[in-house]
Amino acid sequence: MYLRSTKKLNAEVYLNEPIGKDKDDNVITLEEVLENDDKSIEDIINKKFQINKILKKIQEVLKYREKTIIELRFGLKGGKPKTQKEIAQMMGISRSYVSRIETKAIEKLAKELEE
Image (cartoon, rainbow, N blue to C red; front, side):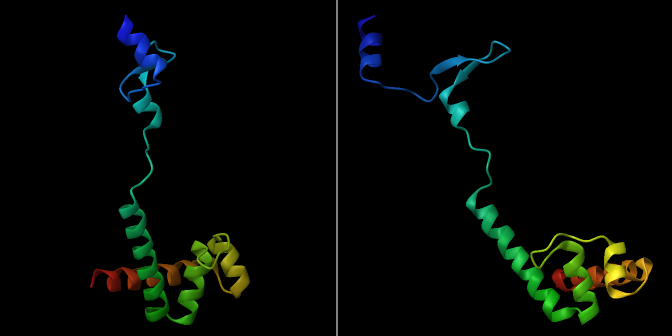
């Protein structure tokens, strides 16, 4: 009893010590509350590296019209992604033609990124 009261007075807290119960009457520990589900820094850096690689390939490989459609379709220049119909109206071409150009551009990028 003395040790328990001394520990509380010293404000010692352990991560695996129960701090309460949830709505299903399961014991909750401080470790569970503080648990971080965010991605690791390595995952974040890897994702940014992959994005930069794709953006570089878009500039190197695609023709102007293909590049424009991909940028508009996926919102790559900071804008909101647009539908094929919206792009078709902007460029004065049919929606199906936008679709064909988009498919061709994605295939080109996929081939380049495999190498």
